[in-house]
Amino acid sequence: MLYDEATVRRLFAGMRAELHAMADRHAAEYARLRRELDEARAQFDQLREMTIRRERAEAELARLREIRDAANSERDITTRLH
Figure 1 (cartoon, helix red, strand yellow):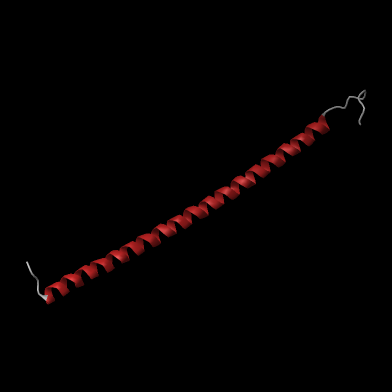
Figure 2 (tube, rainbow, N blue to C red; figure 1 turned 90 degrees about the vertical axis):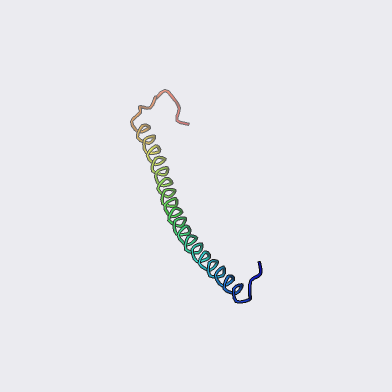
């Protein structure tokens, strides 16, 4: 089956319009996914920062407990200091 030039041009124009619409949908989806990824990264950064702070606080608490325990323990006077 042969098509005349006008029909072929209409078909190509329709296909071109479909491709542009598809490209626009893909660009919008990409932008949405990019925003979602940026939000997830920001949440991850917050979680990481909170975890680091908690670990530092736990280490400081352990250090303070050691100091408290050392201060509360009695020294054996028969043992040399150095």
